[in-house]
Picture 1: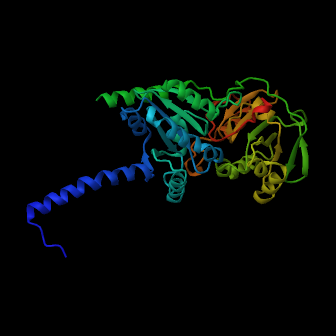
Picture 2: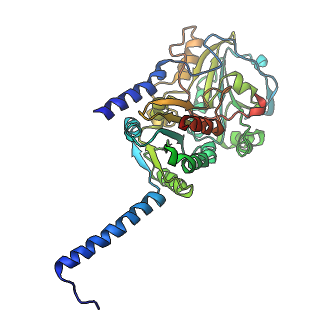
Picture 3: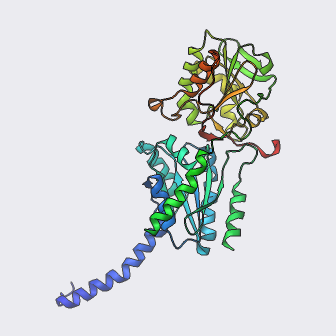
Length: 178
Length: 209
């Protein structure tokens, strides 16, 4: 057993340990922890605007009940991996029913499985309000915001003759980050 | 303060198009409805059948773009059955059409699947499948469920959602489709002619463009 250190020395050691360990834990949490934060629509917009580090923010609107959304979700994860260092903030926005804990758990598990280590929001609105406020007819839909938090482009399925692809989204992102 | 102003600006930017009032990108109110011919269909009474708009004799036609796989459709299926029931003795034809062609979903929405759904749910309307997706495109259906109401001249009198609460029947206040059908039958103007459909995006297969 170690002999007890005098009180000031113990404090120094404790501080040193904290200083050494804390960043490691913080880094781990940022890297691995996938969270899902419920937000009202206006809070979601203000959070995007508040992220001053991002040159560009890409929001992917999805839900666990939407097959094509889940199928295409890896595109967002890929874009995050490829372009985060260039100033892209990836954000997912779930339209799952905020009143159904089972669905929320399912959404969280999906995000963890896909390693969505970025901002994941759950739109805390009724599903009818969610579509109304986002001004879309269907999901998946992708919204791109500039550095000032203004929406500069949206990709939707709303026009059957001009439906978006994730290739188009990525091309737009690459052009904007140039 | 700055953040607050920015978010307000962003909100205005996102919210303003909502008041443009045009959700259907293919059809306007008053347009002649696009025809469709010999779509394979299932009818709870007659079983296998085929469906052509030209063969419909009823005065009012309600066309609902549906997809069995879609939770927003599942949430409304009882309401569609009620709708057909409430106009049973009137000159109204309710038609369901699935245009799902995406791999992995097609199997849930094609004719054999429709047959099962009709049997299981007791659909009291004819339910067709358009593998070509041409009907969906012509009617501007971007999501399921989307409903279009036609009058006796086969002009579009309503396009949009079934009612004002697709996902939650308990919160329905205005029954848009029912109201439109009643107005047409009474020879009146339809009050709300276009609303925002919402639900599962219909993926249109590129090669059919």
